Image 1: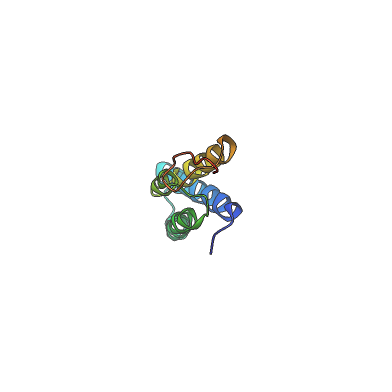
Image 2 (image 1 turned 90 degrees about the vertical axis):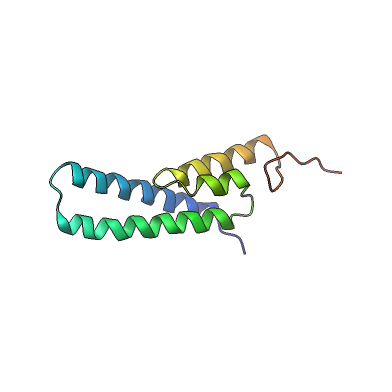
Length: 100
């Protein structure tokens, strides 16, 4: 079963937004309720990004490795997926496949 790239896109943006909110909270007023809400939200978004990136049908090794980076990994994985989709078909490890 593969995951739609749309789900990965939403989770990647939520992961980055939650990280920005957490860092802004720490840098400014450091409200405990914001920290207690955004910490688990960021963790869930991160885990969803990793799982979704690994389950995308066109995911290469580079896409899967990029998804493991916290914060920006989901967006990097999306960029790698888009690049692979626009340059042609790619095999499992990123090498270009030639139809026979």
